[in-house]
Structures are given as structure tokens and as C-alpha cells.
Amino acid sequence: MPDGEEQQGYDGGPVAALRRIAFLLERAREDTYKVKAYRAAAATLLPLDEAEVARHVAQGTLTDLPGIGRSTATVVTEAVRGQVPARLARLEAEQEGPLAAGGRALRAALRGDLHSHSDWSDGGSPIEEMAFTALELGHEYLVLTDHSPRLRVANGLSAGRLARQLDVVAAVNAHLAAGAGTGAGVGDATGGAGFTLLTGIEVDILDDGSLDQSDEMLARLDVRVASVHSKLRMDAAPMTRRMLAAVANPFTNVLGHCTGRMVTGNRGTRPPSEFDARAVFEACVEHGTAVEINSRPERRDPPTALLELARDVGCLFSIDSDSHAPGQLDMLDYGCERAEAAGIDPSRIVNTWPRDELLEWARP
Ligand SMILES: [Zn+2]
Ligand SMILES: [Zn+2]
Image (tube, rainbow, N blue to C red; front, side, top):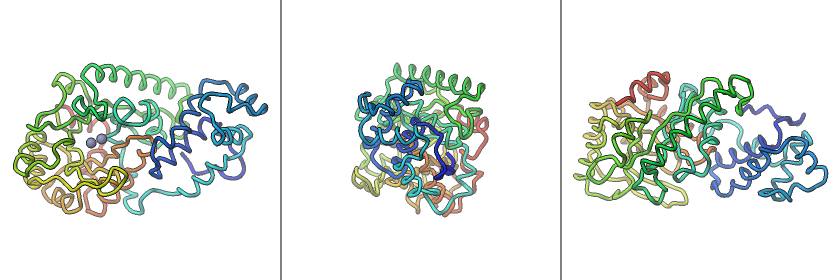
């Protein structure tokens, strides 16, 4: 969204103001549960007509509506009166410009994001909110990659739930296409035209290196990210065998956050897994599997030495946000900064490719 809303007034309306505040808070790494009040208020207002909202503002009865408290009512009141909500103005000022100093040319070259989560697994927002935000950021596509069944703590999707999710993704795309046609899309910044929500999965790499979803379901998806989430402290030899098997699986397109390390954040820190990185990266080259550059500040995975090794071995890369909330979609900035610092050629980064080329590469 442009940063052009200045003192002269605000015509975005209350829903856009509430969504933008939520986005900016998440982008600044506030916990998504703290942001929920803004999204809940936006959801309450969305179905109401303008006159009804204006009546609540005039009568001071906004807080009678479900999900609207004092601070969200203030935002709504200011927006309805055509003023930039003070909370929004403050956040816009605090967060002007990209998240990272480097990597801007690369960020501009990225067409989309191959790794994101919705509230179907452990993300904080509905599928459509993730899609609309990606569209507003100028993405051509977003791959929805909710977790696989074995990751129960993250509410991983069974084959049945994944099949239902594919129908929802199709419905979201149909809605976006209809909005683009009439100029009435949610994304006023770029228009809905050309954006597609792609289907995918972040599939667990099981202990023996097999993937935690049926071949039949994996075959129906556009893109598959395979990641280790369990037994991260396995000895190097079996961990190497496990990862080699996953990387060689014809369904695997991207090796997600390869070391599993955590360097900061409220989930604590965790050392990287141990494995023969050269052997794994050589297998990635052989099988055309991309090594993920996970942009999340708490992951920064792979660590720099491994990122440079993967570069020297000749790997493809995918710069992903691994977003669990809409505001985290912008964290691609961090991954771009690291990729540029490592001198990785943009042509080796699969999300700089045209979408059709990407989909062709991803096909098993
Ligand atoms: Zn993961
Ligand atoms: Zn993930």
C-alpha cells in the first residue's frame, strides 16, 4: 500500500485502516494475538453498510458492536470522519521504508512467495486475508503451505482437510478474478488482476526421509516445501540419510529451513541440526530441489556459512517468508538482504522466475 496518506485526509475507510494497522503491527513483529483486536473489528465492520457505521459513530455506539473496543472505536471514528487515524499515522511513520537496508533490487525482482500458513494450521489469519495482503504487496502469487498431519501441535491437515482446502483456494481465486474484472477487488493498490493463490503444503520429513502426506494429495498441489520439524537432534549420519531421501523425492520442490535453528524470538533459541550439508546440497542440485532462504528473523536459515556452501555447490534457492500472519509476508526483505550479501545470482532464485516457469519446474 502506498505511503501517500498524509495530513490532508483519509479516504480508505475504517476496514482498510484496521487491516493496515494489523499488518503494520505484525510487520513490526508484534505477536499476532495482540493484533487480533484490529482484525476482529475489521471483520465486524466489513458486512455493515457505510450509513450504519456512520450512525454508530454519530451516536457513539460503536463499542456496542461485537469485537469493537475503545481503541478500535477511536480508529473507526477517525477514519469515518476522513481523518488519518492517529494510531495508523504513528505506525506508518515508525515503519517507513523496507524492513532491511540491503537486497532491494532482489526484492523488486521477486514475484511471489512459496511458503505461508493460514489458520487452517498454525497461522493466525484466514486464507483470504493472507491472499489479499499478498496481492496488496504486489505479489503475483502466494503459495499456501499449511502443515501436514503429523505436526499435530500445528493442527496439520489430514488428506481430507487438505482436499477441502483446495476447494477454498479455488473459491478465493474465483473471487479475486471476479473483483479484478469489475475493478471492485479488495486490493486497490495493484488491482486483483494477475494474482493467484497457489496450492501447496509444508510437508514434514519423517524420520526415514519419507513425506507426511499421500502421493495422491501431493500430486494435486502446485508447490511442495519439505521440512524437518521433529527429532532435530538426530545424529548426523541418519539425519543426512533422512534429508537426502526427502530431497530426492520427486514431489519435493523446496527444502524448508534446512537446519531448524532458532536464533532469537519468544520460542527460545535452538542450535542447527547436524548433517552433511555438502552431500545434501549436492543432492538438491541433482534433483532440482531449491534450498529455502527462510526470511524469518528468528530463523535466518541456512546460516551464512551453509548459504555460501549451497551457492558454491550450485543450488537453486527460494526466498520465503514462512509467514504465519499477513504482516509477516513483508519479511521477504530480510531474506533478500541475506541472498544479496551472499552474492547469489537472481536467476538461481526460483521466485524471480515467471509463474508459468515456476509451476513447470515444480511439477513432479
Ligand atoms: Zn517449518
Ligand atoms: Zn512454515
